Image (cartoon, rainbow, N blue to C red; front, side):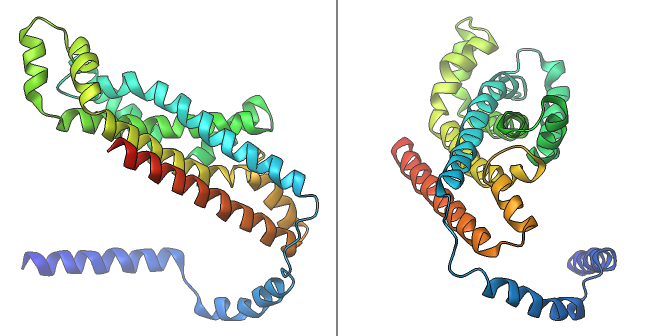
Length: 248
């Protein structure tokens, strides 16, 4: 009976989503020839003026890397306050958790859009957007690592007279370092992919170059930019995987 209820609920949710989205296979089928014509004009990829693409790729890498670094700095105190065993001010646990949910709930793309209006066009706005969204994600992962750590060393530190904050700094943070460092690397990977499209809202990076090419229907240029994006993401993925293997 319980399984039947869950199946019925799943079907009802999917039916509701279909009613809202209104997928239309006829429209897709009608649009495929137009897409095929565009793709036929994409070969060969246009790498002329490659210095502009390379500069935008550098912006993308810088936005993601600096944004992740700042996010980690913001996340460290938040993670301590959001971990029950070491929270120095217990009554702030739920407000901090709510703040983390808010930071994670608002996408970096939306933060970037807001800060483009606040600080102007360019990669600086994109970096702020990446940092704020990533701070929520990193802090949540770190707080969960702190909560799932072996409690015995923490209890020993507290019995010895240490405060919760001291116990976290001296005992739990070093103990969970491989896990927390790996989490930052995963977020950095994700931020590289996110940063490639931030330029669509004027926040710099490869997305800026991609938007210009799409607006001009220059699909050979679009293909060249997509090749660079895939190469950049692959390079970062391999680098991150190598670093994680060394940490664990």
